[in-house]
Amino acid sequence: MNILLYQPEIPQNTGNIARTCALTETNLHLIKPLGFSLDEKHLKRAGLDYWELVNVSVYDSFDQFQEKNPDAKLYILTTKATKFYHQIEYDQNAFLMFGKETAGIPTEIHEAHPDNRFRIPMRNHEKARSLNLSNAVNIVLYEALRQHGFVGLI
Image (cartoon, rainbow, N blue to C red; front, side):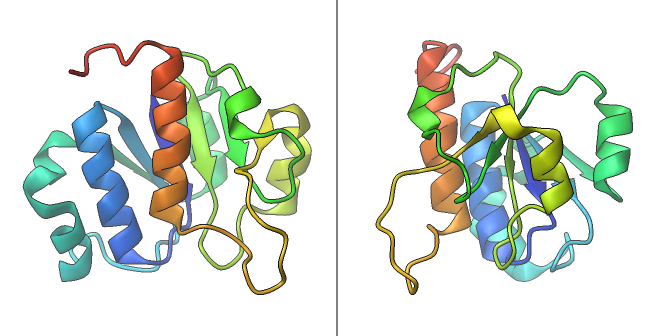
């Protein structure tokens, strides 16, 4: 499995996600610009001493990500989708893509992948727009891992 974060802004979220990736043997992909330095103490603290267990790839742009991963099967989390995350059959090598905390994923990426968009059910309220990024990643990642029998995990 792969987690793909598009321009993440909050170091604690990315650190928490890295820790989840370490414990689930999931690759972490980050698309710049990042809202923090990879050396930032809040990022390191949230990820604890798990960083050495995470396979992290960093890309300068979404185009560069696509060039280096031409066969990547993207699954895009968005509040704009109609399908729910549990209704998707995830590929064994899925790239679960999550947008930046304040703006999500750009329209042009949505338009290029209209059939691979999904959402997490939540209430419809103008002040409750979305879940915390690291919580959303955990919910979706564990569903994808469940579908494949939690291979390699005890």
